[in-house]
Image (cartoon, rainbow, N blue to C red; front, side, top):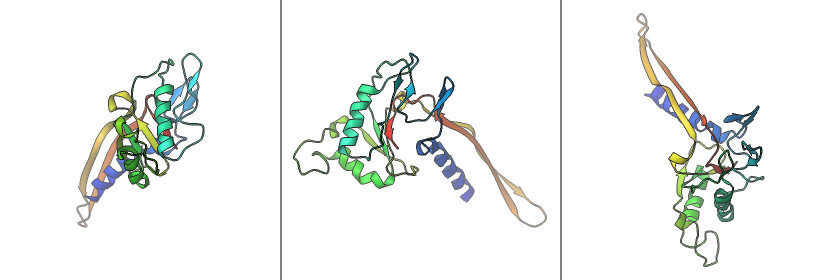
Length: 193
């Protein structure tokens, strides 16, 4: 039973590793490799596009509004054409759970004494708690599942086998699983490390 839990936990942690490691390359274009969040993703016409700010920002009302604006104006495909998709999920770590709920669900502007309405409430962005993010300042805006290119493949499902030693009553458990993860492209993802 513990071995099965360990297999499942390892699979979840490994699936999230490229969200945690900003130096991990997720795709190669030309002779260069690129991470998930960059300020210089290449376009086929020679230009670049970005899916993060030059400086990382802490999650808050202004940072999220700015990210949503940038998502709509700067999110392009590899040919530089604007992608017609809205963010559907805000992935965040455990420490931001209550902040995210205030940002997305409050009727009035969060963390303010003003009586302004909260423009984020009507955007239908759902919170997505990710317990495997290793930095609580990390957050991502993601499109609906059919519009992002994050990938996870089970190459071989988890397999366990019990082996009796025969002579000393000991039992050995062996386990094997194989998977691949990454992204075909960073299109549709905006965030901050």
